[in-house]
Length: 249
Image (cartoon, rainbow, N blue to C red; front, top):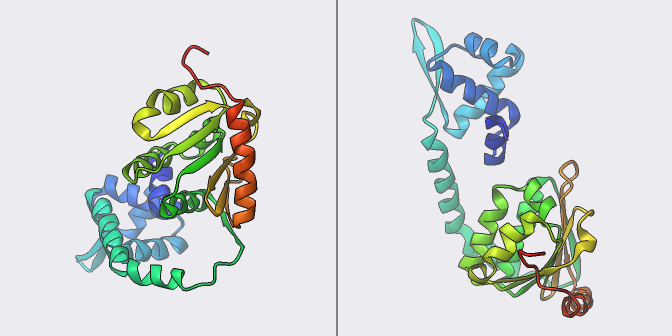
């Protein structure tokens, strides 16, 4: 994954990432120098720079009556993430109280893009209940190679147990089976999903569908206790008749 793509994962747009990288290389530079180095058009560069300045990762100064810009150190990105996280933590009780007050009716939520898939993953942590999962592990780790391990660590932190029916693959054995015990997980074989980029989680009264095709990622949350119960029954039936995933297979 390129630096631009990694910065897009952080939350920058493509042009913001390109301009920020250009400024890190150039040091103090004029808008003309930035436009030439980044290959971002002059008509766009001002809006991009304004956005980066608003985000606090580009500063400006006047030198000989000419505006010069400079990128903040990369460590600033981590500081900004921590500040955003702390800001959300402050209002989290208020947000949760609003959520708790809504009627508990069947509903469906659709999230498009990789960020949407991450949102669904976070919902699984928030539910904080034992999970069952039909998993295409290869597809999931290809789509979210950096986020998926962080989600696993978060689930372990909350001590949420997980049963996984996964395709039998080298990645599944290395990432899942070999670490089952310490990651509150038990993995068994379900090869029928190996050619379908889809992962399904069942969590008490909720079902999460994760479309992990890299060209069309999406997440769907279905809040419906009867639907969740039906899939739970199907999962348990398949689970009983499945083999434990092993390194020697």
